[in-house]
Length: 160
Image 1: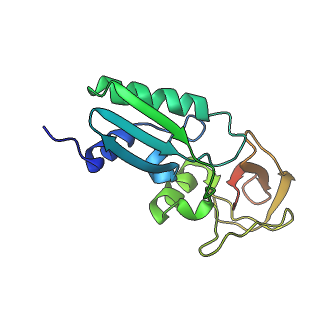
Image 2: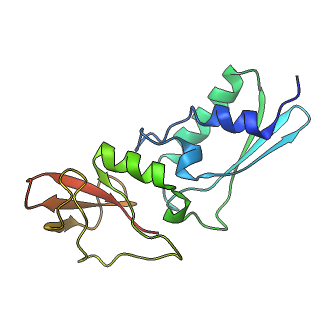
Image 3: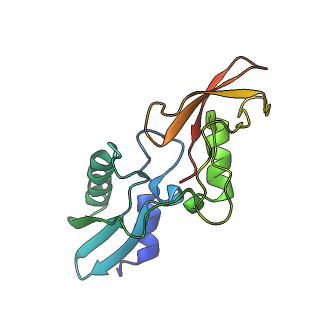
């Protein structure tokens, strides 16, 4: 059987971000490249944030998933350039974030950094009557907001 990049990518869709389990690493956009070199599988990944503490777990999960599917010679390379941006998230990934209770990034073109005092739409009630509570939340790539209409705290996945 010939191994294809498409097959490896389908297996990598089984690996979910440990901090945002509704997204797999392919739809999150951190899989930079997959190369097949004989029996070796090379996976290049780009962290969403340079200090992302989940990267080691993601590396281990990639190796475990590929090993469990018969690929035992797996090499993982972390790529920092080009840097990951929130533009890597497609519409379906953003919808999954919203359904999970995280306000998705709203940028649609070039890299945009949201101002800390900007209003975020509440993922629960769609209100803009929200306020920033902390520029950093459970991870550095998210900020913490509070909705004054439905009284729900929520995280916002930052535009990077």
